[in-house]
Image 1 (cartoon, rainbow, N blue to C red):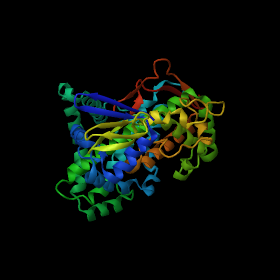
Image 2 (cartoon, rainbow, N blue to C red; image 1 turned 180 degrees about the vertical axis):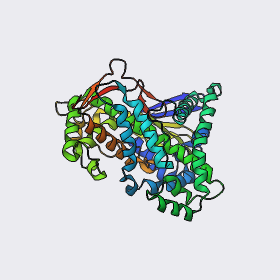
Image 3 (cartoon, rainbow, N blue to C red; image 1 turned 30 degrees about the vertical axis):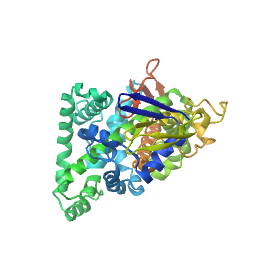
Image 4 (cartoon, helix red, strand yellow; image 1 turned 120 degrees about the horizontal axis):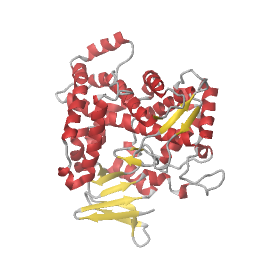
Length: 436
C-alpha cells in the first residue's frame, strides 16, 4: 500500500497504489456518502466534448444518465449479435490474408466506430476502410485535442482549437438529423416504425420515447457522444492489444483457434452462449485486459473534506486527511501488475508482466484486484456489450485464418494513453488462411 502526494501551488494530488484505497474510492465513499466524484472542474473542462453525459457528471445528473442508458445494455440486447456480423464481414474483406502486412489496429478503430453508430443510431458512419470518412477523422481530432487541453491545465488557453471546433461541427452535423428525426415522431409513431422494420428499435428510438422535453436534443446528443467514446476506443484498443499479443504467441493463437473450431466450426457464427462457453477465449480476453486496462490511470476529486482509511502516520496504517478539491488518482494497471497478488513466478505461474492466458486456469483475482471496467456504482455500464463484441470479433477472425504473423518489432512496443490506452504505432501483422 503506497500513497504518493504531489503538490503544486494550490493543487494537491494524491496517487494511491492501494487495492483498499481503490475499493474505498470507487465503492464506499462514492456510493454511500458522495464525497468523491468527477468534480466541477472536470465537468467544465469536458463540457464542449462530452456535454452533460454519463462520463462527465456527478450526483443526480449522473444517476439520471445511468437510468436512461441502462435498459439498452440489458442482456437481452447484448445477446443480439447480428449488428456485429454485418461489420465483421466487411472487416474480414479488408484483412484479405495471404500474409499481407496490415495495421489491424487501424481497422479495429473503424470497425468499432461503425458498429457503435449502427447500434446507437441505426446507421453506420461507414469509416471502415474509408480514409475520407469525415466523422471518424473529426472524432479523432476532437479526442486528441481534448486530451491536450486536459493535460495543459492552466495553460490550456495556449492550445490551438481550430480543428477542435471544426471537428465538433462535423460530429454534430452527422448526429443532429438522426436525433431530430426521432424526436419529430411521437412514441406511437416510433412503435409503428419499429414494427414495420422488423429489426427492433435503435438506442436512439428507445431513448426518444422517454425524453420529450425541450432539452431532449442536448440530453440525447451528449449521451451519444459519451457512448461512442467508450464504444469505439475501449473495444478497439483491447482488440488491438489482444491480436498484438497473439501474433507474438503463436502457440496461444493455435490453441485458441482449436477451441473455436471444436465449438462452432470454421464458418458458423457463434451465439452469445457459445462465446461464454469458450474458456480459452475468455482467458485470452481477461489476460489482455489485465495487462492493458483501457483506462490505466484514473482519478476522482474530493467534493468535500474527507479521509482515506490508510496512508497516514509513520507506518502508513492510520487514516489520512483529504481536503476538498484534492485530486485522488488510482492506477488499475499498476494494481493488476502487483506481484503480491500472484503466486511466486514458476513454470506454471509466469511473471506478472507476461501474456499468459493459461494463468486464469489456476488463478482467480480477489475482489478489487482486477478492475478493467472500474468498479462500484460507476462500473462500466457497457461491460457485457464490450466483452461480447470483443469475443465475437475474435472468433470470426480466428475462424478464417489459421496463422497470424508478427510484423511489428523493436520500437513498436510503445503505447499511448490519450483518453484510453492504445498501441502508439499500430499493430502490424499478417494473416494466413489454409489456402495461402
